Length: 273
Image: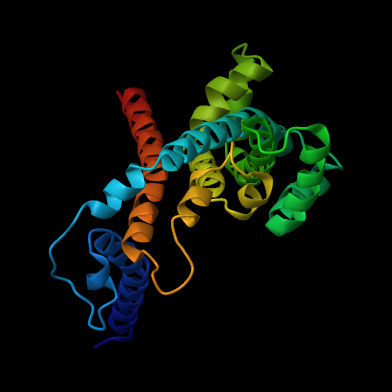
């Protein structure tokens, strides 16, 4: 066996192990969501069992879950929308019109992701308490917009930097203004990377837990907070209910990414035709 063939085989084995380590926890969580508690806590893992929908019925039957779902959809959706509307033009300006402050701005935006959530949550909690907006959707949208804005700018600057300048210069020669160049040239060319940035920002705020825990008590609770309350201390941990809540919590981001991917594919099909 040649070294090249051996190296390719080793690489495929490593990729297979990495894929297995990423997929198996998801598979096992989904499997446990359909099990009774006695089938989960058994010393021998069960792959064959009598499935049940009681865990999903319990989760979906709680009013707090529906309220948390509504809050998560509204807060995360609004934060991503505002973050994209403000972040994409800002990223384009940083990529196309650099100045002596550009690197400092990029580092500042990136540094927002370095901070631990508690370092962000405590000052914001004081601000929202003093202003009377604590535990409201508005305060959560503003807070999450800070996260999505930083993420969108951080990931979109390289995407716009890869857009050929010659294409934009040709558009300007044809009479396109700055806004037309941005919306009709730069955005479509960089759309694949930009959609990835927006999807990542949505998943980031959808799954955010610590900030939501510190900035809400009842009215603006998001779905991760509600899901964490489905457990109880002691030995009687409802593992089936927890696994079902994890599965349900994962569905909206997957749907969001699927919709974005479908929009992107349809746009490229229309463009190619």
